[in-house]
Structures are given as C-alpha cells and as structure tokens.
Amino acid sequence: MRTDQIADRYARALYDLAVERQAQAEVSQALERLQAALDASPELEDLWHDPRLSAADKSDILNEAPILESRVTLAFLRLLIVKGRIDYLRAIIQRYQTLALGDTEAIAVTVTSAVDLTAEEENNLVSKLTAQTGRSVSLTREVDAKIIGGLVVRIGDRVYDGSIAGRLARLKDRLQEIHVSELGVKE
Image (cartoon, rainbow, N blue to C red; front, side, top):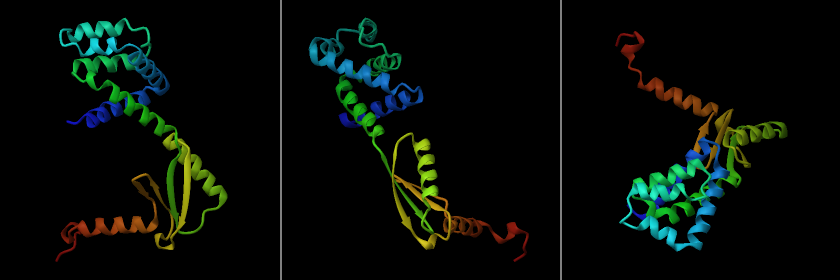
C-alpha cells in the first residue's frame, strides 16, 4: 500500500473518531503541537523509528510527552505504534489537517425544483442543510419542470431525489419486478 493511501486511511479514521467524540479542535491542536515538536526535535522521531525499542517502550515515551493532552490523539498514536504505522505520522498529520480544513469550508449544494423556490423556502432549506451537514451551505438553484414536484438535492457526489418524477420511476421499477403470479392474477 502506498504512503498516501495509508495516510489517508488513518487520517480519515482519526478524523471520524474526532467528529464522533466532538473533539476535532482538541485533536487538531494536539497534532499541531506534535508536528512542532517533531520539527524542533528530530530525535523524538528517531526514537519512534528505532527498531531496538519495543512498542511498549515507544508507548511509554508517548505517556511522558506533555504536549499530548488529547486522549483521542494519544490512543491513536499508540495504535500507530502497535500497527507499525508510526513511520507515516507526518503524512497522516498533513492529511488530517487537510480534512479538518475542508470541514470548515462551505459545501456546494445544488437544488433542482419544478418551480422557483420562494425566499422563505430557500432559507428553510439552507437552514436544514446547514444543520444536517454541520457546514455552511453555498446553494445553487435550478428549475426543471420535468421533475413535476418536490426537490432533487445534490451535495457533492450524493443525490437525494425527492422529486415526484423520481418517486414515479422508483414505483415503476418496483412494479416491474413483481411477477403477475404474486399479484394473485392467473396468467
């Protein structure tokens, strides 16, 4: 597995855990302090890479590090040591910071409706999307009479189809899957 794949996998796991525990700021600060410590003291990084030290010895070194007040970050670093992935720490920190930064930016949302939304409807929709995503929303509106009614919402690469045309298409697909004999009709 390549370095960027490993870094992405571990950074994403740490980020998801931080979000789950509502500790994003705490983890980000701990990683920033750790990055600064690594930059200031290459010996610290050398200790973690030293094959003569056991995983337990490396964990003991972590326990003594005053910069790591974050329990989530400390547990994560122990995991990296146990899994033999501590060599990827700098790449993981960089990827985590990219994920955390992306979380603070507005998310692009495209909403398609059969008729133009009123200002009140648009404000309600933006409020609900902001609450659901936890990020500010940059809304783009489109009007397409073919959807008949309802909304089609695109957030990144996800599409939420609540349109009447979409519902009718799904109903048609389900009806086509049902065999005539299941309806109680004789052929």
